[in-house]
Length: 155
Image (cartoon, rainbow, N blue to C red; front, side):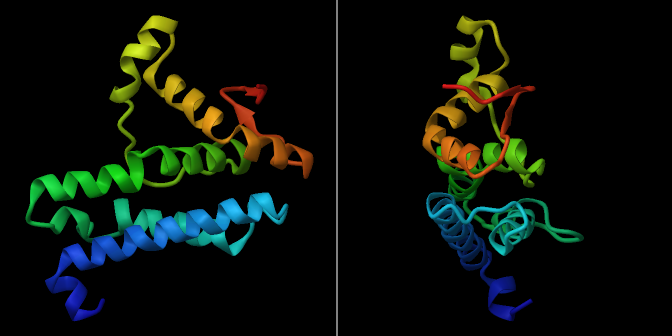
């Protein structure tokens, strides 16, 4: 690892965030251009980089080494817990059968889930499915059967 990245974990963590965000955009573009495939290099890179960000092998994640706790937590939330990464996670889980690394905090969805009598994770997945309904429709058109909590995705 580069000495600068070791000495400045914020630089490392933000670099990882930017890379994940850009790869997410590539995946999104592949869907709209109907070139999406679970075996695409973009998917492999996303899974690898997300693991490197959230749960790297034999080392402390860069975001965890950031000194400012508030910045550390905020960066993790926007990289793993925000709507876009949750939607990418949903897509990979139900369309490719892969769950990317990183602990997702579903507590945000508890009040809505309670009213509906479902789990916070299910409510989060409902929100992700709603965010990506057009993308899921395109994937189904090109032959992907995206599964949603054990049933086919429907509007």
